[in-house]
Image 1 (tube, rainbow, N blue to C red):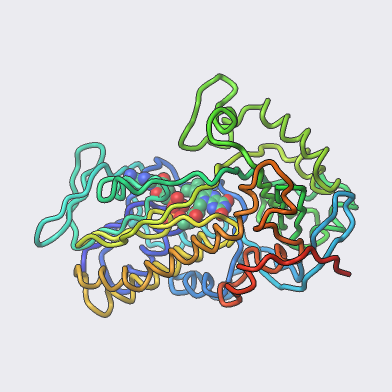
Image 2 (spheres, rainbow, N blue to C red):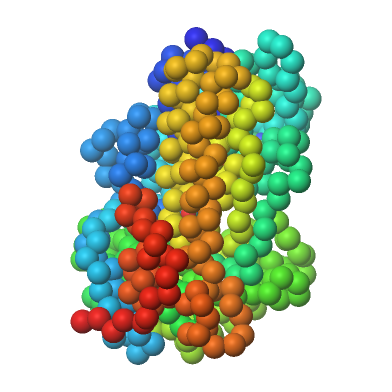
Length: 416
Ligand SMILES: Cc1cc2nc3c(=O)[nH]c(=O)nc-3n(C[C@H](O)[C@H](O)[C@H](O)COP(=O)(O)OP(=O)(O)OC[C@H]3O[C@@H](n4cnc5c(N)ncnc54)[C@H](O)[C@@H]3O)c2cc1C
């Protein structure tokens, strides 16, 4: 039995902590936030491998994760179906996965209000220094502390997120407040809209009360609207709150300026299918997130490993943020089972996950490349994607990846 510290109590950290506890280790999870993260987050696409990781982490195999849809549709600007693809998928919410993973963790294993400020290594172990001056010793430390990882900043300060040139407006809208037409045309599907140079998508998820029944008005619609925003004043304006305070590292949902929200809603009325415009209009608290890429050239330094978004951040087009963190957690637990809580185990983990993570980031860049083509005629941009290609390539099971077709430039396809 080894002593293992996991830094970061979001989905990646919770999967790693649960897996390592179940392997018999003494695990302590350290989360910066003073309170549980319940009630935060929006939609998460699930894949079979995420189910595998969740199950191994202690979530019952039969636990419902979210809303099942059978197909995908793209709507034209008038709201008519442009094309359709049958692809069954379960759409979860961040809050549901968080709740399941936190419940799986035995009491006393997660310390909230415990920000790690620094990490030190020296034989035979590793020490985490908390912001309040306390020190904790362990055999290994797993940094699942996200995009702006404190641990990565210490070990590899040159590795920084790179802004992709566009943002995602996101939000959750209650099904019950939407028109019958919007509910009927969208709620059975994963839906897309492709205004020039932009991309709208969304899907049904469990509503605030956790309800997922069709036709009962208890679900919510999770939308993600990708829009170009040049680095500099344009992006800064989006990340500045109504009191004029700039949040360059990301603005919290409740801080997004009402002026920016009003401008975004006006653009939705002009550019989106009426169903999507209605959803955007009726979403109480839309929020905005800059899209970034992050690839760390290493995932292990002696007795310290990076996991999930701390190591690699892929754009959301691949829908793999949580699945990738789960795959990392599985590979980490297997490597420690094979080689013990040693630097050799972490080196083996890195060898298994480094190229895989970088490939996911690269694929997400390809899928999003056309959204970076600001100005000009997007339909003539070499990376322009037809509605059908977007339907068939966004957030699909990684086993369906087809690098050949993704490198090509499919013609727009008018489908049934
Ligand atoms: C509150 C929240 C809501 C989210 N909602 C969505 C969503 O709706 N849709 C989606 O696709 N993705 C969402 N994400 C991102 C998604 O969780 C990640 O892409 C995925 O889980 C893999 O990331 P991660 O667990 O490795 O890191 P993250 O999810 O980024 O979590 C990092 C965790 O580390 C903690 N932390 C940071 N620094 C320190 C430190 N120094 N010491 C201790 N703890 C620290 C943070 O508080 C956070 O809990 C959300 C993340 C968070 C934190």
